[in-house]
Length: 416
Image (tube, rainbow, N blue to C red; front, top):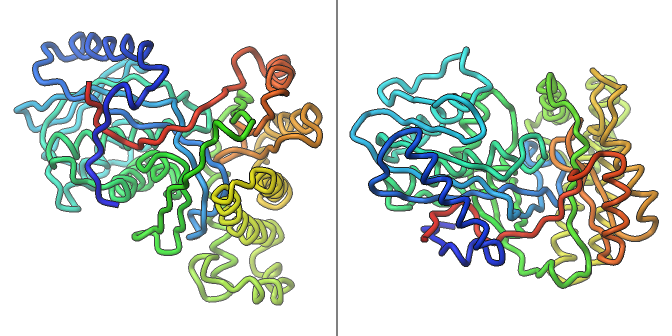
């Protein structure tokens, strides 16, 4: 999927273009306040993403369905003569600075934006790309903890800037996602799959098969969501993500423990029939929760592919049915709707139960993203949207229900 992504401002933001002009002016002003004169400005944008199908399947080489959304991270950058990268985010104090003469991993930097920045620079160089000094100022609309992958959007934005500032825009979307994931896994210390970064870098409705992660099979779907009579809602339940790294890490670990029983590294390599035939022995070797999570993998890997086919066929009713099946699998088998370290906090479970009560037999709903805290996703008939939003926000607070649109462009340079 080699491509040099440059998108015109009006094409990127559509009906939001006028409002976004003010935001881009704030980018200029923020840069000048942080770094001084802005001589040769280059603007970049990377979208947040919503996971449509394939909940925790990517890290075991499964299939996913995703869509880029209109909420994005935007940045302005310019080259410098100094051998360092400096980045300032409007939402956070301080400036991250990376010395390009020392890109080594440091344990004490784990979990910081500095680690992401350094990891991206290191991986770009390791892969043979040029990285020089530059300054960058960013503003995000992808709310942290929203389940829309603010970290992946930030990572893809930085890779996109390096691609255009120093490599003639030649870092393709797949490579950009791999670079971003490396930074998050190795330098930041979060054992995530490739879904978030790939969704942000590619854009649009995208079906991705991670059977060979270094060469994922990517298919952008020709589906106009605006014509299906439903709204795409993401509900922020306000859950606390602190101390959840262990919960997230346990999912791929337990799936791989089941795979190891069969002499494989990933569940995608295990024949489903053999798994069910040997389930009694797998229980003894890996434990019941690992078995249930493996069952979820087999279900949701298949459902992600079936959801994509339903959209390609224009069969939205069938698509909704598969979304509900996916949601039930995450709830019952994957068990990522609340954290066992804090069982009193079950915002996701409550939001799913309330959505079912509000929508009845209409619409579809499922946990969104990594789970344990954060957000759910709902496909809501337009005639039900006002009542659904009111019912959800009565419990989770005003502004907790986001109505999103799908963005076709992934990480891109923005031509003003």
